[in-house]
Length: 119
Image (cartoon, rainbow, N blue to C red; front, side, top):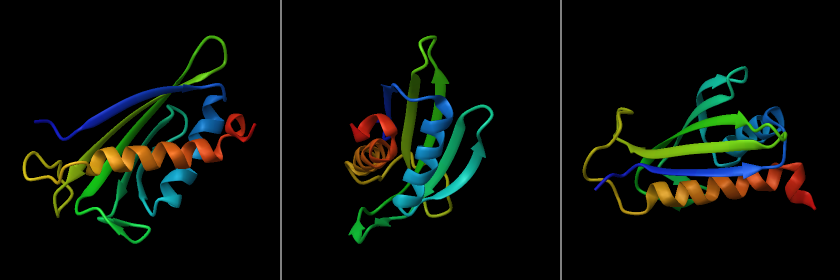
């Protein structure tokens, strides 16, 4: 059973606006940016076992790639997977639902920071 979860969403905001919101969302979830490349709209971040006092049980890593659409929207592709104690991708023994929870929280934090979500 794969522990990696992937999700793709499209937002009406420009790539740079979504990228900046993603960086803020990582910080809002107590994550640490591992790689940041605004020019290619690529971001990698690591999250601890505990986020906002909720013990999830596994560390996780997020890989985010943004790409613009011809009509000015942004496609957001996110992949999240659990990590072992030394930061390698966990292939067995991961707790069920941790990447899904982090994914849900990440998109909630991202959308909260996007101008298009403010109505």
